[in-house]
Amino acid sequence: MKESIIKNKSFDFALEIIEIFKELKEQKEFVLSRQLLRSGTSIGSNVKEALSGQSTADFLAKMYIALKEAQETEYWLELLMQSKLVDLDFTKALKDIKGIILILTSITKTTKEKTQNSKLKTQNFNPD
Image 1 (tube, rainbow, N blue to C red):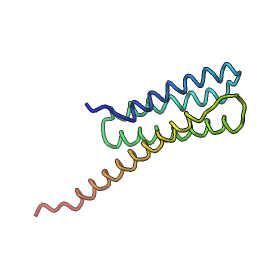
Image 2 (cartoon, one colour):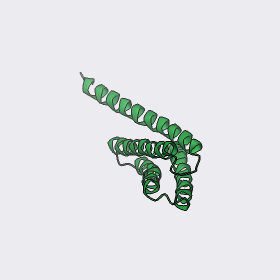
Image 3 (cartoon, rainbow, N blue to C red):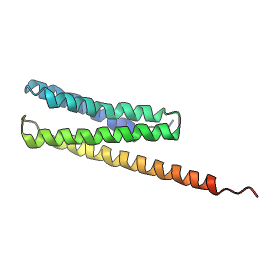
Image 4 (cartoon, one colour):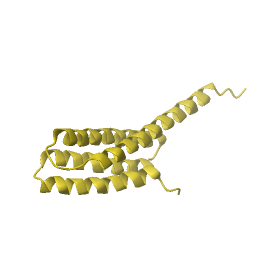
């Protein structure tokens, strides 16, 4: 099986989020840090589930969930950065999550288009 770029990127990002979570706890930020940990690590778990999906619809549904979690993670990172609740630099994490969002958006869009085109071809097939 071919190596998955999004699987690797989302796993590496989860490790990055765990490190940020540790630093946030050291700075006594306990509420937003948990939200960030949950959403930031669930991206990879949903990607992994999608890659072992039972159907294209299952794959697409899990990838959409991963995309939503990535967008939520971006929100928490932006909120933490702009609120200045803690003294951390979130620039790299924000760059990484934006890249993940782009990949997931591309995957979901392409998969949806392929599925719709496949359905159209099936509907227009005339075996005469």
